[in-house]
Amino acid sequence: AQSVTQLGSHVSVSEGALVLLRCNYSSSVPPYLFWYVQYPNQGLQLLLKYTTGATLVKGINGFEAEFKKSETSFHLTKPSAHMSDAAEYFCAVSGGNNNDMRFGAGTRLTVKP
Amino acid sequence: GAGVSQTPSNKVTEKGKYVELRCDPISGHTALYWYRQSLGQGPEFLIYFQGTGAADDSGLPNDRFFAVRPEGSVSTLKIQRTERGDSAVYLCASSLMVVGYNEQFFGPGTRLTVL
Image 1 (tube, each protein chain N blue to C red):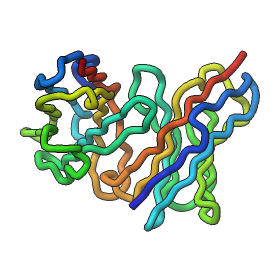
Image 2: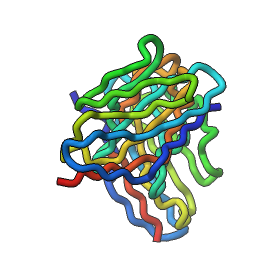
Image 3: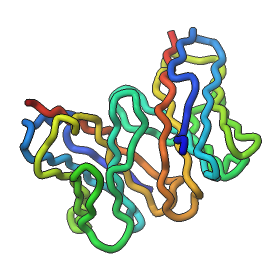
Image 4: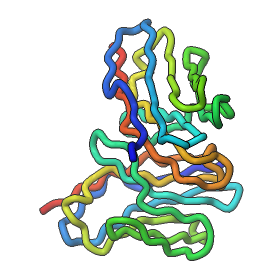
């Protein structure tokens, strides 16, 4: 079984500051890990994913995440926040098949001018 | 091309009523998923279809919930005798297949409010 924990339901940063959203996972098999973004009244959009291979993965809009097996973490970062990054972010884990994807509770990112 | 669409976008109903929520997946996607997202929570898996059959319905909370996909495309999530606790956003997603990793594409959701 898989599960994720997102630390911090709300994160606030200033425009131009580093964004760090934390995600820890639990999985009984090698995990596939995902970050999704959800803008108001829109569906979830895939930001990036880790399946196999390189542990540092780059996604859209300048985001990246690093899979750290020893820490069971997959934190999302962006060097410089933009106002348009304000949204809800969800970390998710699966065991390699789509039917077992499990989401965290989400982190709402606020970007202050 | 068109993404996943869901109708209605909002549904308000009274306790005890029956509701149907519709999902139109991306053309050619054989796998379809339903999730429920309660306020302040992440999406929670309900059921998925591979083609016409419900391959895994273990996430359905009780027998008031039922979903169909009769022709392997459009799916309808049906909720009988709605309760206030059913209020949530119901998300639909589709992907090319279920086995292995295939990106799930999500619709905008249907916000269900049970008064």
